[in-house]
Length: 467
Ligand SMILES: [Zn+2]
Image 1 (tube, helix red, strand yellow):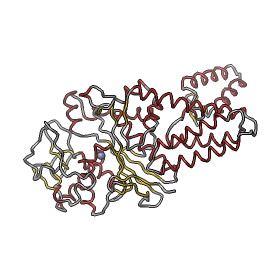
Image 2 (cartoon, rainbow, N blue to C red):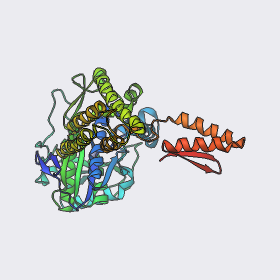
Image 3 (spheres, protein in one colour):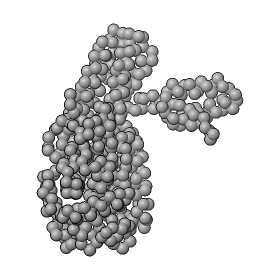
């Protein structure tokens, strides 16, 4: 079985074959932390978290890189409005984003690269583009000359910005062609700026991604992901910059785009008053339930978010985690063998096959979850008539599925014990030790260890960690 990935560039599913053997370099457009991250972000970042997890499960060494747009027009607008330094504008939103990713169990990113840490690479790339005749400087600004690149439009099939009715057309007299885009923007009063051969200024949005990826991955890499809305002009601009700068084609082998997240059938937007920040959503719903809701659809499909739909996902997910929990509880008391052993074993094997086949088909998590539900049904019906080892087979399958999808981590060892409870037990153990009641203190330590929680005595007191 071979993994097939839908490639936006060729508009078809292709067999996945990375450029460098088992190494996979993957980049996904990251956040501009000038406002609260929202549910659309969650959809994209959960999707690529699953992609990275599955590739690692398949044995690939994945380097997953995400950029952080930490200087941009909207950040500068917010700076002016709030009277803050740009660093102070982004800090709270960035921290909120990381917390949200943690709640959603998005753990696979290797590096968050901040645009402002790559100014020398950005400047070098812009110089190269000017030298090769793909860019021009005007009064401290630098623009990419779209007409100089023969591949413009090959990803999206689009060559110019579609003008929406009523949209304001910004005419920039400095541009040779209205489609040209800024690589470098000259400083305006009060703006953050960096030195460059064209005077103080800051990078345009598109150039940061190619500066970061060429620095880390070289001229070509395997997967570029992002939301569909970014395909034009952002991803076209990346291709134009990178291929013109390095001369290597294709810049990216597989382009992957996630479907939209709508709210009750409408595009989510602040003006429609149907905007869900991730923070609000996570105050309302458990992160794991939200993740399940997102994963229970194919990543390229649009998702229609509504409180009712999440409630439905919540009960489906509850049934599944209950079933897995029942199975684990039964494992502790079941006899060695039972009359349903062969049924459960066969179900576990076939669930693994179906799960993998679904994931091999362009990461079809919806079909993969169907296999998980099937196994849960069979295993639960067989409880009481199945032996420990056959149950362990099923349990191991659930564990693999959970690792790939990033789900039911609370079923895992120690995860069910809340932090407050662990802290309380650690305090009780300290009390027992002070009384020299070592039998009790050892017993508490052993009970926690059985749930995967390790205690460590340090100079400043006892620390614990989940193993
Ligand atoms: Zn990007």
